[in-house]
Length: 223
Image 1 (cartoon, rainbow, N blue to C red):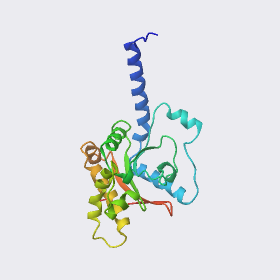
Image 2: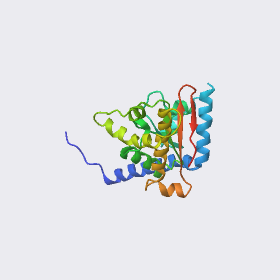
Image 3: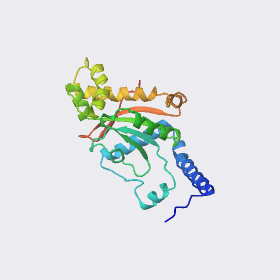
Image 4: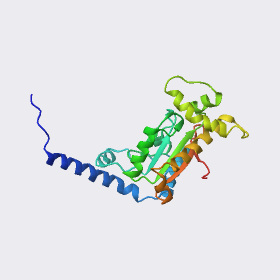
């Protein structure tokens, strides 16, 4: 069987369709400010805490609507822990969030590249670095334990937070989880690719801490 070449005109049409979908996707997100996007997350989490879930944007109609292009209004850099699914704890649905999940919610190259894409091409106005109670990756770093293989890269990235929180009173693990979130927020704010948007007030970057006993996401103080 012979394979025929795709005509240049067809390629051009497909590329134009992709850019049109991307533009359509970005339109809604661009209408929200970072503060407004954060308020929407807070409201969704409050519904989750109070067991008054609305399960928005989970219909067949929504699925077909976003098939034309995505329009997430917030980016979540979260941990891979199965008990911390962003769309559920913020009571949201299809196409609402652009989620990057890495153990220990660390900023690493592939994850940063994904975030850069969502900021530059989808114009999401908000990034939330979401840590959580009793994070296993942070616990290993706090204990001074060693990990084999690529996991060691994750523990290494968290260890500076262990050092920073060492003198703080209270629970060492809880303090380090929060310090780790704060470090990642700072790292994102200072990233060369994101800093211009932050300085122009087009991008808001904050940290959060999820307590799975209460279901509440606590926003960490902005520095």
